[in-house]
Picture 1 (cartoon, helix red, strand yellow):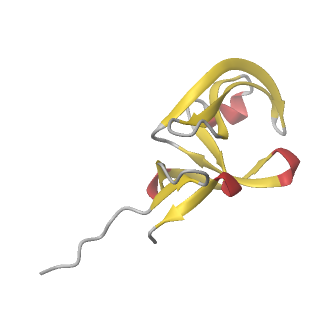
Picture 2 (spheres, helix red, strand yellow; picture 1 turned 90 degrees about the vertical axis):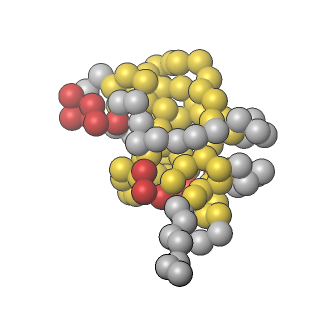
Length: 107
């Protein structure tokens, strides 16, 4: 019988709820506030987006919404709702999760 390869999942660091798949990482070299490492994901799960707002980030002003774990409510990162600079349009509709706010689950 062949070995089953399970997806590599990330979970909320607080409650371990599944929030993302490793295969959905678009960029691993993102930097969040205070020079913290972060990942840009094409898709996330089990998160709830807060209100949209313009926020000044390292690459300029973007319309973002904080994303919270759907179970415990912990803020895990943000979603790019609208990107104003053409060079950063690839971020639109993608989600940043701060590395210290997620954990690898069973891998």
